[in-house]
Image: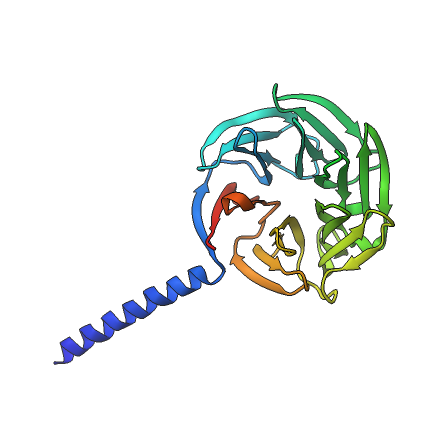
Length: 295
């Protein structure tokens, strides 16, 4: 009798754990699709809809040193490395943006333009006195915006002309950028103290393209040390917290929910809404993760 009761209890417990795990796994509607090892401090990933594959920037060492070790990889949507070192000769490539058949990447104090058809670097735009160029975003017109975390600046490249688009302490160490129709969505790192440490972690902001006014999304409370920013195509945003290693969602009202608890170094991700896919580089673990958005 005891053994039968014990067996039943164990079976009930197992069923509870299985169901509980299932509920927890689906509570945020994200299911792990695949995990790719073998990258070298991957910082950013972007989708090329024409060729149906991903580009991944690999810092491959220090994020601040000009060591020539950086490169860009091509990865398939099913998690295979198509070409590990597609573009070489970079230093510490970070954010990526795609416009037409040109891929742009931020490389410490340069914006590097790469011709996708040939895989060759076609231009390097030197940014005077830049300290830490980080993310890059492109709007429909081909205007390229680049954040500089250390100088509280966002630069603008328009028809090969570089300028400081905005400089303000309100940017709070600007990191992730997303260009929308009439505004730039900014994931701020936070008020920095020494190195990458912050006195107050950052939150999500919007910057008007018309008059450059800066507004908090939500009540302005700290959210985290924000890195990637991507739209959910429904007025909200998927964002990563690099230090805490989290994937978060912020809705149109600024309400924050945690979707994934990941390792530190969760960096500049990509969301493909039409394919229900999210890709997250784990910079410190040399991995790229793929999740299915289970609607």
